[in-house]
Structure formats: C-alpha cells, structure tokens
Amino acid sequence: MARFAVGFVLVTVIGWLTYGTLFFFQLGARTPAEYWIYDATTVKHHLLRTMTEKRKVLLVGGSSVWFGLDAAVIQRTLGTATLNLGLHAMRPLDQIVGEVRPALKSGDIVIMPLEFEYYVIDTPYNYWYVSEVMAGKPDVFWRLPWQEKVAFFLRVSPMRVLEGVATRVSAFSSTEIEKRIPGHALEQVLLAMRQVWATYPAPEENYSFRNIDPQGNAILVQGTYTSYVYPLSVQSVAPGYPWRILAEFAEYCTNRGVLLYIGWPPVVAGEVAFDSPFVRDNVQTILRRLTELRIPVLGVPTDFQYDRQFFADSGYHLNHEGRALHTERMLRVLNQKITNHGGSMWRTSSSQVFDKVPGREKYSLTHF
Image: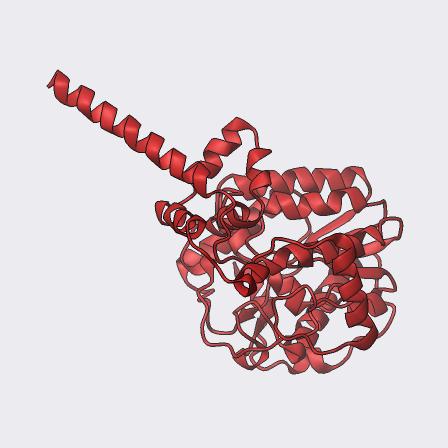
C-alpha cells in the first residue's frame, strides 16, 4: 500500500512537472487569436488620452457598446464630448475600468452597459483572456504576482496548452505570420487611422482597428444574426470578482466627483426568458448588488430588447439601424434618471423613433 502511495505521488509530481514545462514552452506561441484587438486598443487609448482634460462622457463595456451605442449622437444630445471605449466582452472587468481611471476628472460621466458575461464570470482569467495573453502578450503573465500566476495557470485548459505546443513546433507562411502580430508600433497604427478618418474607406471587416471612427464607434457592422445563448439564461451570477471590481470603481468615481451609471446590453427579443424563475433570480441578484453598491442603474434588461432584424453577427452586435434605436433608448432612460434627481441633461429634443420599436415591452423595476 505504501509503495502504491509513493508511486502515485511520484507519477503525479512528474505529470505536473511535465505539464508545467509544456505550459511555459508554449507561452508566446502564435496560436489563432484575435490579434486585431491590440491595435484597436492602441487606437482607443489614444482617443482617450486626447480627452483627458475635457469634461466628458465615456461609454465603457464590451463589443455591445462598440457596435451598439453612437457616441456622436450622445455628444450632440448631452452637449458633452463623448467617447466609445467598447471593444470585447471578454476583456477582464478590472482591465477596462483600470484603463479609464487615470482619465477621469470631476464632472465626467461613465456609462457602463455591461454584457451579462461580466456578471457571471468570477475571475479575470476567463478562457478567452488567458488564451489571448499566452498568444499575444505573454509579458502580461510574467508581470503577475506568483499567486496570480498560479490562478492564471489553473484556468488554462490542457487542450489549449497542446495547441500552443503544436503551434510552437509548426512552420507558418509569411502571410500567416503577418496576421498574427500582437500590435504594431503606435506611430504606424495612428498613421493608418488618420488615413482612414481622412478618406473614410469602408473597412474590410468588423474586427479591425480600422473599424473605429474618431469617437470610438464601429464604422462597419456586417453579418446576419443566427442565434446566441445569453449567459443570464444558463449561468448564475458570480459571487465575488465583478462586485469587488465594481465596488472599488464606484468608490473611486464618487471620491472624484464622477457620475457612474450601469446600463444593460441589447438583447434579441424572445431569446431570454425574463419571466423564468432562473433568469428573474439572476436579474434580481444583479439589481440588489448594484443597489448595495449605490450605483444608479439605467432601466432593466427588458427595456433593451430589439427585434432580430436590428442585429448583425452576434446577439450583442446591432446594425446601424439597431444602434440608432439603442442609443435613443439609452438616452431616454438616462434622462429619466437625471430628471428624477432634479435636473435634465437633454440639450436637444429626442426623436420619435424610440416609441416605434417593434416588440417594445413596458416593465418597471418591480417586474423583477
């Protein structure tokens, strides 16, 4: 029995040492990944730096913000410089709020219509993020404290490690290697963007740093909606990570005179059973936690349902017509929130299209 136990421990140790060796060997291997996001982040950071000293409205979140809200319309309506900072819903919450903190000044407004993924994932090291870091930015891993390195390591699947090993020992064409460059030089990216903004050629694809206008919006939205499984329907609200980050950010904003609002992402009408007990409990939990943090909430999820004709290639990505509807609706709810506190932020009148959205349902906070 003792020999069996010793053998088991020995095999386990050798197995972990072998796996750990393979993990470190494949760090930096250029597996298929969303390399476009590095240059896109460079563009958005540059736009944010140009607004640091201005009074501003920042739209913060994932790709539902990038494709779904029009910063130019919000700027005209509120009379305040507005920037769309949305990019990808799998970027960790602490990362996206950390990027905006240094730029915030008293009087600024932050609107965060977070995708539901942010409420159900209880770690910054989600499957997408760890894969992207290993492929494009392994230095991010090396800068982590050792405890965080362990947490990161444990979130990586063995199949992803094997994919990295296979990529490391494979040969690629120069064309394929060019597609897998994790970020170009700042000057090179900005030169390309100035050319885009000067001539406004149609970008070739949705997911490119060239698909960003001077206010951070997506220029091109293409694709046809087929289906999407919203995590609110299948996963419970996470107990720790998102609320810790939101609590810290809310306190940061309060201490600096910054107004923070939480919004909701667009959803395809009928794809989420908001009346089901499971979904209702999730929404109640989110609203309760946000109330405890004293973060104002812009409406409820059912306020932002739209017919599938207004969506592009994802259940979060609105086409241009859908973006106009969603922006108008978000502004309407924001104005109601401000008015309830004794003021109004409208500078121009709202259009009438808001009340003509197909499938518009009337709900209140008491619905949940």
